Length: 120
Image 1 (cartoon, rainbow, N blue to C red):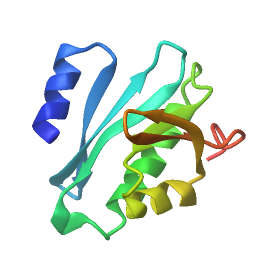
Image 2 (tube, helix red, strand yellow; image 1 turned 45 degrees about the vertical axis):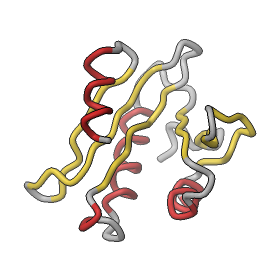
Image 3 (tube, rainbow, N blue to C red; image 1 turned 120 degrees about the horizontal axis):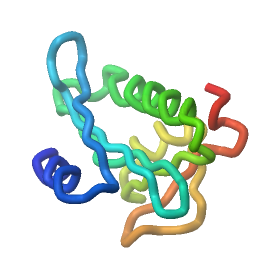
């Protein structure tokens, strides 16, 4: 999947890929993008299986939401996830993301709750 996300970033102007590090090792991938409506998105998040459960995903999201929220043009941050991925759903909820009621294909779209953008 990471290779697919990298290709997506290279071929489309809407996504930007980032490597996720734990100490000096690359342990994952994430993307961010700016949608036509001005919303900022986090996507393509992958954490190596051996690193899962160690707080890497939480640290990634805290870092990315803080960085995106600091941008002058950021008014909302969104992401999408599979509804059967309960671990991801709990993580996103714990960080202030709430489902919008919209879907993208078969994924739930969640948005950082109003008032949380810029107040990290």
